[in-house]
Image (cartoon, rainbow, N blue to C red):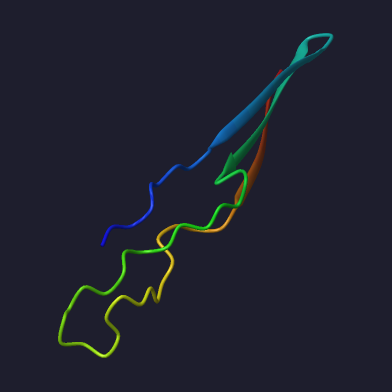
Length: 72
């Protein structure tokens, strides 16, 4: 038995702004952007009552980070 393929989408958006002599940069980072669930591989112990059962998740839920940098 095998687990599913692990495909995780991370995204980053960056916008540079300028207000006269002040420059700003806004960053938005999305980890696991589409909030996909990937399960661990099934229990492969043949003498276990839990054989073939998947009991946990292999990745983290969506995480969004927003940041801003100003240079003056």
